[in-house]
Every structure is written in structure tokens, then in C-alpha cells.
Image (cartoon, rainbow, N blue to C red; front, side):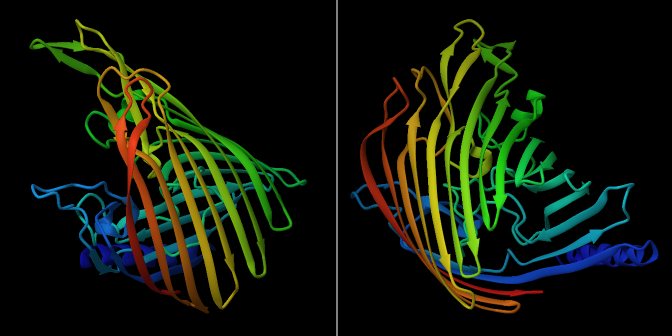
Length: 406
């Protein structure tokens, strides 16, 4: 890890020297962040519990004791980060900027490894701008919760940074139009081989997003639409014979969002009709609706979920806040005739509340957050994919955060 850190620091120094020679402007920034957390039970999560989602279902042992009803907790500094913003030189009338940012989040089971968060260039002509590189998915957008938990509202709020090409047009009357095509790298879709880049790579069709926003006097309000087309498999084996197949599952998702900011207030919310957004740290996936008896070729239908959240934060130095999120499994709308692929497809509903309080000084943030979360599990109705005969489980999460920003 030390070697990676030295390489990154050396790269920043080289960029700084080049910036001075070529009349660039640049700004280094970063943070040292520590997260101390406690959970009352096992949960769906990533990064060993740092990125928290929702409580796991009951898992009874031979005596009926719930194996998942065991407390856990830890302390990590993996989301400490370092970055550089670069500006110039201009290309014609376009203002040129770039960002390179990394943290120690790693991937898979390789934590404490340097990882790229943002790496992009942006050309801005005033009303029009083109971004090429990796940054926040447009579904995360300009409206996201202000909270301490690193999941930032997931699984109710899309959470994803992806390689993309994005065009944005802004009129003088507060209208902003966005169009983007995206690929996958660190945040992946689920499928027959688990989460993988191969489904969109074999599809040859990037993810597409379009939106329209109105911005004025601290208000942002808008709507967006996302399309995702995947190829789950390229071949099958039936009776020891291998067949080439042409399978595809295409889904559409829709969202509406709004945020109001004032000197002491943040009020924000978002609602989604989400379809197969597993690459955005959300519940979803797809199901097999038919199987060819000779070749094994399958047809699919996506699951649909409704996700909604509301966030209110007040203050400057002392900041109390509340976040409320709710999601509902709406099923497939079609009869399921085979396997299902996705995340949390046995979950009917999830409801989470985050109560937070932070103390803020220049360069410092100290905060605590309490989050009770409820998930309802049950059995799937194969006629429509909905979950029935549900029961609930509850997790109580307490999080303490200390951040030094520079």
C-alpha cells in the first residue's frame, strides 16, 4: 500500500511541476476519515460493513436460534482520500478542467488498496459542457442525501461512479438538459455469473441516461430516465451439447428529484421507479420467463422497485438532520419460469430512518448517527414476482465519524 501511495504522490508532484511550466492552475485536496460503527445484527453490506444497506433475514440454526442475530462492529479509515483539481489551458472558447481522486477502498476483498474514485476531463463552453471519464452516475446526480453513513442513502438513493461520456446544456433561464452514455467498471450489474462487467460488455450497448432540471434561487427540481440493456449469456449447454444463444434483457427506470438549500437549511428528496439497477447499489434484477427446451436459450423480464427518500438538515456549526427511506418490491408483472438473478429479490420492503448530529468547524467534522432499519422478507409468488407471507427483521446501527479535510 505504501508503494501505491508513493506512486500517487509522485504523480501529483509531476502534475504540479508540469502545471507550473504550462500555466495550469491546480488545487490539491483530501481528507482523513475514520468510521466507528456498531450493528445489532448481520446486514447486507460491502467493505466489511462500512457501506451499510439493510438487515439480513433470519437464519435459524438446529435449535431455532437466529444466526444473523449477532452484533458486530469495527473501526476503519479506508475512505480517507487524496485528489487534485486542474484547470487549463483553454481549448478555443472551452474552459478545460480535470479531476483525479483516489481513496483506499480497494475492491473485492482487497481493502486498504488505492482505488480511483474520479478521473475525468471536462470542456465547458458556458452553455454547453462535455465530460469524459469516471465520476458520479447521473442517477446519483445533484440531489443526494447529506448524511454520515458512507452509503449516502443506498439502497434508496442510487450510488455509483462509472466511466461515461456526458453532455450538459444550460440555458440562461435555469433549464439544464443532460444526456450521458455509461459503462461499468467498479459498480456492476448482477447476472448468471454474479456481479460482472461482462453483461454490458457483451451487450455492446452502453447505459443511457437523459434528464431535465430547473435550477434557481437554491432550488433544483427535475426528472430523469435511464435505459440498461444487458446480455446475460452467450452460450448454453443442454445434454452435453453447447449452443450459441442470443439473450438480452432491457429495462427502463424513471426518477424525479428536488432539493432546496438556504443558509441554514437543506431539504431534499428523490423517488424512483427502478428496474434492474443493481449496478447502482440498489435492490433489483431480472427473472427467466421462458426456456427453449432444445437450446436452453432464455427470455427475461426485469424486476421493478419503488424507492423514495427524504432528507432534512439544519444548521451550520451544529447540524441535526433526519433521513427517511422506503422501498417496495413491485415484482416482475410476468410469470417466472426459471432462475432469478439480482440483489435482494426475496425482500418485500425496507424502511430506514437516520438521525444524525454533527459538529462542524473549518476542516473538521465530528458526528454521530443512529439508524434503525426494518426489512420484510417472505416467499416469492412465481406468477408476478412479488413477495408474500412476509415477516420483518430489524437492525440498530450506531455510527461515529471523525473527518479532517484539507
